[in-house]
Image (cartoon, rainbow, N blue to C red; front, side):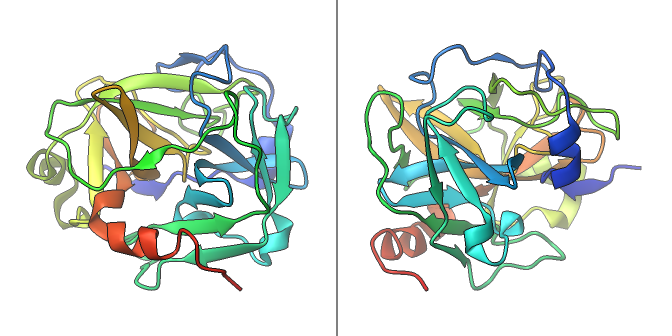
Length: 252
């Protein structure tokens, strides 16, 4: 039986985890300039979700990662080891998409407001994709998620990355049925690389003629975190106007 889960990490598990070599079929990120938009969201020093810098004051994430109060979340950027921040900020506010459904994990979008980050080669905003990309397009995933499924999977200290392929909604529905909606971008399966618990909210990005575009935010996948089944990201182009309208608005 295939069971889907949100790809958030238990805070206590993240706190107790030891160093590990790989995300699911991934590799170490050795330079902050490789994915300078990558964010680690932390509570009491423990990594629990990822995110992406989309402006000096805004972090794109997943709705199922939201913590209350917002000030309980520390936003860490500019590092390949989440224990040693390049820059860190306390979240000022956290906006969840108003249509988010916690049962179906539909509209799994959120946005964090922080005091202005210093943007440089180590911390840079990624452009939010306004368009969809064809099945078969190569995509980059990254995060501090578990290196394997199950209770013994470990949260690595070193940021992991992998390449995978986008797949069509039809292909994804062949595995997950009507769980897949127009707000979801699937990728992986067929022994391609996979996200896992702790990668939630983090980026899937496409290099569009030399410009990296943030296609989506890690949302849900197989409970086994294996590479046999595709995972789903909340597709940013589906709510592009909502993202743009909140890029500069003050959130409470």
